[in-house]
Image (cartoon, rainbow, N blue to C red; front, side, top):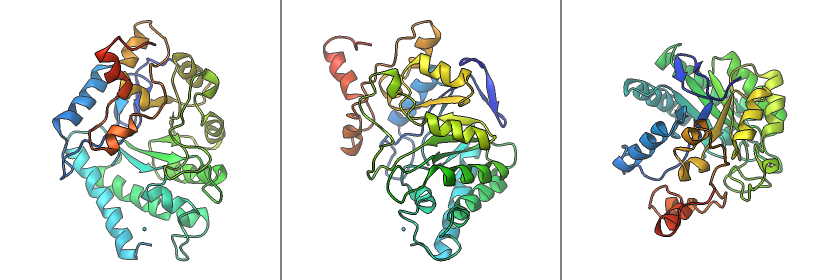
Length: 299
């Protein structure tokens, strides 16, 4: 497989195998509308060569759950009508749907708690409702944990069972991530990725997923170098390479790699980009702004 070949997920054509992982930019208007700054981020990514760029979308009563299912379906329908090429369900990192899957959070004793079949029921209801809302030919993807990497959390075997159920219910692609934003042994956004050995830190889990789940697989988590991306795709570990932090500093990274400059991403993996988001200043690379005052960023 070629990193730059054109592929399709359902009816959605992708110019290459690079994907910008769903990211909290902190730049939407108070009513959820896309601001000019948020639109510029997406435009820069598209013009920078990224094949697909995505934005992300406690005990609850039966009525609450049904309302959430309907809300996902309506939101997906609006996205389709607005001209988006597809939608992605965010079920990773300890957000609501991730909490249903995780024994850490899900202590329910009804049909939505207990074994992994029950803990995945809300997710399957949402996928069914979305598919009914947008039709069979509209791409519906999901981002999910391969594991929580925390005591009593979601484990790989259960995650694979969820993946198999999703594939059987018509999911078009699965983005594999892991860890919880609230803490744990291994974070979704790890620091200090300064060597190829530290890249693609969900690679082992992806190999296990690939053996049992037969839909396109997207791998996120510490991808920094062209060589790592190439090895993952060529070895059939995943079909697509998803990145987040590298695109904050270099939205044109894919065009650079395509041009022949395959030096690794300039991202320092220091997570300093979280600071401006939490402060309400939006998404940008702190180091890049410092470099623009002084010298160009060093790769």
